[in-house]
Length: 424
Image 1 (cartoon, rainbow, N blue to C red):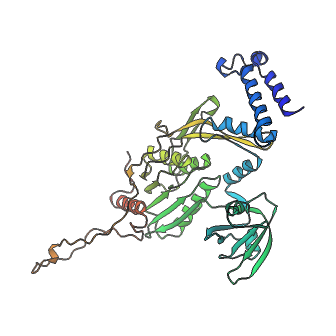
Image 2: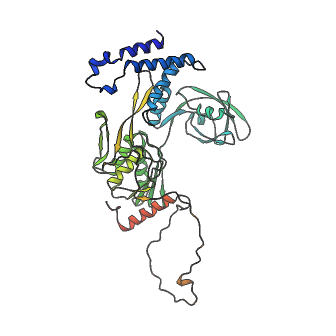
């Protein structure tokens, strides 16, 4: 039976007369499709199939119809074919399938900027500075450039052929087998000797474990406990909700972290358990207009409980929950099923998280101050030297990262005035 015939049969089976016995009590009249609605769908399908300027196969048309149905709901619901669905699952696990390199397009050339340990590229002897000139016999020039670079990724176990020009001019033809490449989501460093900086780029299933591991490592390598930390969520688009919930739990002893409201099956509440990672240590969370979704859940929870000071710009405002649902053919859909709310009941959707201390993007302009002090005056009286208060000094430049500079000022003020940032 041709697909059009199967669709028409499905339309007959889904008429109100056929479904009334099972769905009449559960679906309102407006939710039931009429026979005319389904006939219109098959008419449009058939018109496109027969009259579009180029021939389109039925499978492509059906996928387009599914995509259109989901895209009309909201910006975040989407249909994913099997390859895209597998890639989404890999991203949530903090990995992707490739050859283990990072590249940058410079002067229409694909230059290797980073080699991951034990990846296929590393085992083949590729080094930073190599230029990839072709992928699977496709020259990396003109319109092929971006598409070819994307083809470095693919299913685990598959082979990709690349041509590499080394800095000494030699050319190598390599056959590399793609494998899983682990991607870190947390980066940290000590700042000014007493404070910790932790940047979270996105949320995967491993992000909370990564953060705890790096906190413990930094604590263990300091003679004294950290006096404060900066949690940088700027440009973090979100990701796995459970990772953000676990991180919020790590900074809280009890209370609500986030709850969702949608249809009955989408109403969930997440609460904190006793025990903190850094009890009593002041926390500043940096956010900006690109901090979204799980980032906003974490910032909102810490803000509502007075556990952290939120610094930066109002966040993106993506407060909707996307459930990832797999389909029988290996594909899947990402469907919006609920909204997020902070512990105090604030909706994140379209509102975002408003910072406690707003810092917009600024440009630092040096100004030569010509004003004088008493010590600059002729014949001024000498003073008596005494030990004054601690002067703020930092290895972070206000010119390089103004928001981070201000975050450190707040943390140092908190460490001087109080062991913790005051509760609201």
